[in-house]
Image (cartoon, rainbow, N blue to C red):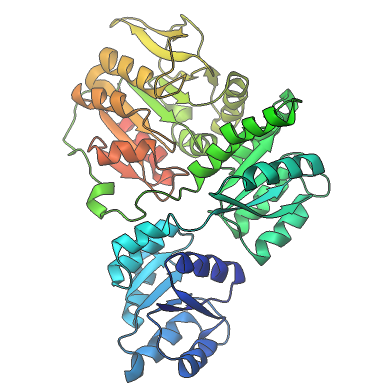
Length: 481
């Protein structure tokens, strides 16, 4: 199959072409509408043309109209790919001749689904594309020793390929502009341009490019890593302490490689039916007051919480309890940062403390949090019980206790994260008459935890991250205690 990619942005063309090549397309590129028309005249009819909206010389809308006016091109499959994505703009593109519309930034899975719906590839081909080719990794670290050991260990895995190394953020940004990798492994502390400044620059030009921070977990390192997570890093991995080369390599395999494969999945179906990913629990009119909100989140959680909590934290009239999968030394710092963002007190839960309306409590890293009590008093209980879903704290533990104590007054929220934690607890909340909101796939760093809720039909609503805090605030207003 052949595709023509029309976009004035080199990074956008590179990303589109890479995904299309994974789907076995031969790609030709053009930087504007005139170049595209010339390419069609000289190279023949492709199976697909992707078109950006805003381009110099001839923009995407004019190109669509000219192609549809030409009898030779009236049946071309034309996909508009643009940041202009409100309903009126989409309608304009369709009226000009686009067969479909894909909003930037997009995931490879979203592009694959569009191609299936256009009939230019099959679901089987799109699913198989997720397994083709190694994950392309860019390693950014000022230490030559770290770069070498990472390159050797990652390169020994057949699913990974180190496509470049950089000694600082400035070099990394140049490399990404020339050829975007599938994921960036980024040190926090570097000369010239540090990891957080580099991350912010990456997010401006490549908002969906996965970035895994690789940092020392000293107090200083953990604070900087948390800053990076709040600035948009997808996840972090700890640099191994001074050990033998064999032990360092083992730690990289156990933690770094596992997280890379979580953030850039290559296996499994890339395309699912719309019904499979937006199955919802039927919403019904509910009159019982909300007695408490419980939130479960993992990979991508600090950024998600920083988006959701400020929408309702300052005026919340019920307790809010949160499980974020993190080690102990991170959660106290996360609570401190969230307090500043929310203009409200966010604290780590303390064993036995009374939970009052308006309290916002975070489960301490490494300990399960649940609520206990009666109609008069609610207290926090912390335990060192075995991990559930390989997690401690686990959302399931908190959610189950909320369903038992608050019943139909429980509002559960499941945000971005890997795995199935929160599924069993959400089911108990729904069975008790409560409700659950899940984050949607596009805005999730990893659509594991919320995806399980949505596919199980337990979600009362599946919403983009930007809408979840507002939705919680509205529900609290309608069903306040």
